[in-house]
Structure formats: C-alpha cells, structure tokens
Image 1 (tube, rainbow, N blue to C red):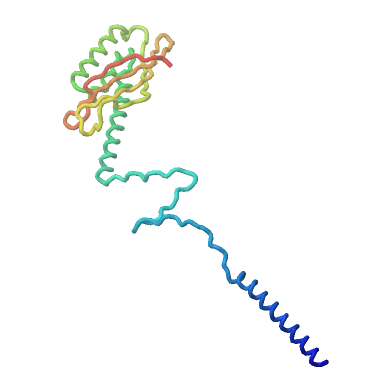
Image 2 (cartoon, rainbow, N blue to C red):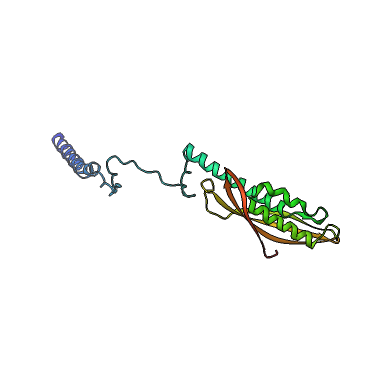
Length: 213
C-alpha cells in the first residue's frame, strides 16, 4: 500500500515539474525580447566650424544697425547741415526785409539790406525804390507792404560748403495796406547767393506769384 502511494506521489511531482518547465520555456522569452526601436531621423549635421543660428522672433523684423560715421565724417555732416540752415535763415531774412516797406518814409527800409547784397542787387533795389516812390509818393495816400517769410528750401546742388553759388527759394505771405484795407497774396522769392571773400552775398533775387491756397 505504501509503495502504491509513493508511486502516485512521484508521478504528481513529475507532472508539476513538467508543467513548470513548460511555463518557463514559454514565458521567459517574452521578457527577454526588447521592443523594436522607433525610427527617429536625426537632423543633418552642421558643417565643421559652423555654429547653429538662433531663429528670428516670431514677431518683428530684424533691423540693420545704424551706420556709424567716423568722427571726421560726422563733423563734415554737421558743418554742412549748419551751413544749409544758415543760408535758409539768411534767405528768409532777406526776402522779408527787402519786400517790407511803406510810402510814408519813401520806402527807405529797402536800403537796410544793401550790406547783404552785391552791387548789382543794390542797383536793382534802388530802381525798385524809385519806381515805388513814383507810384506811391509820400505825400499821397498811405501805402505799404508787409512780407513774412514762411518756408525756405535749398534748390541748388549740395554740399553747399564746397560751392561758391547757392540758390534758395522762400515762400512768403505779402499783405498790402492802403486806405484802411488790406489784401494778402502768396509769392516765392528765388535768391541766389555768391561767396565773396568767404561771405555769402545775395547776387540775384526774383519774385513769382504762386497759387493762392
């Protein structure tokens, strides 16, 4: 009886061992096998010595840095701008003063600008004064003109510092008063400057009516 029980026990152990071996043979390879690697493409490499560039911001446009002038070039630019501004102011002053006068003093104020002009322009202004004295004598009805300079501009080539002749145009407003009434018009004075002994003098002036605003 004991031999029979021992045989059964041995058979049961053999079945358990066989089942365990089968499970190990089936399950263990599943843990040993790693999943296939993902197909990830790497970006192409940069050439030797080249650094990666930072992308521009999503908003805004890259701007060029301002051009920096050398000290000599900056001084030359400043001097040119100052000379142009000086000529514009001179043209405005000459246009308003040479065309503002009254019959009560025989239009004497015209001569106030003689020191700013060449001999030819002085002669021209003298003839203008004589014509006004004939048309509007001092003993007659009071008559006068007030001229205000508005906007000057340089119309000749630049730079002016390297030129001996410069032309400027000045827009003016002229108001004529007589018998208690006033009328206004807009005109342009074209003034030519000529450099003589290092100083700018008016060598020519002409007037032109412009369309009224």
